[in-house]
Length: 335
Image (cartoon, one colour):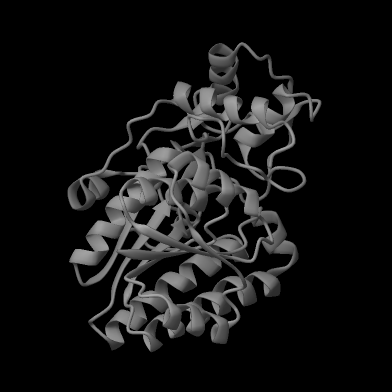
C-alpha cells in the first residue's frame, strides 16, 4: 500500500515515515525543503533500510501534484506540509493563509482528480483557543488566537465540507499537543531554523552550548510553580498515532477529530528539572515577561484516541528528555 506524505522531511513527518516503512508501507514524500533538509530522508532510509520516493516540490503546484498522483497508485495521504511558527504567522498572516490553506486546497483537488479520498491531517491543539478548560475534549468549541491556528481550523472545515459534498471521503484530523523527543538512534530529530519556537530544542541548544540561557515566559500563572503547563508527547508515540489514524481512515468513511497527547500536563520548570535530572546537563534560565496569547494550562483528554484508534502513549517524560539530548549532542548543528 502506497502512502503520500506531504512535508515528510520535517520533524514529525520524518519520524512518521520511519514508522510507515517499518510497518511495510510504500512511502512517497513531497517536500519543498523550505523548513527541512533532504538529509532527513536519507537518514530515514538508513534507519529502516528501505527506500523513499522523494519529490522536491511545493504542494501549491497543483499540476505537479496531479502528475505525482498519475505516476503513483496512492492509497492515502498524510498531510504535514505547512508553515508552523506562531510568531511568524502574526507577522506574516497572508503568507500563512496562502501557504497552508491554498496548499491544502491544491492537495485536496489533486486527490479528488485521482479519486484518492483518504487523508490524515496534521492539525493542532491551537484550534481550542484560550477559553476552554483542560483536559480538552474534541467536542469543545473552536477558536484561535493567531493566524497559524486559524489556518489549521479553516483546513479542518475545508476537509469536513469536502466530505459533506462527497461521502466517499475519509479523514482523520489529528489535533496534537507539544511533540518533543527524537528517534532513539539519535539519527533524526528536531532541527529548527534560527531561534527555536518550541521549548525542548531551546533547552537542548542551551545544554549543547549554542545558547546562553533559556527564557521562561512568566512565573505568575495559576499553576503549581507559576510557569505554563503543557502536554508534551514523544514524537515517536505521535508517529505511531499517525499509523493508527491511517488504519482507521482506510477502514471508516467520514471525518473524525482526535487528540494525540499524553493527557498529563508538565510545567516549563518541570521540563527544565527533568531534563537536568535525566541528562545531568544543567540548564541556565531566566524568568521574563509573559508572551501575549499564552495560556496557563493546556493538556489533552485522550480517551477518544484510546477508543477509536486503540492508541495511547508509551514513552515517558524522561524518555523524551533523554532522546532529545541524544539527538542534539550527536548533531549539535542539526542536519
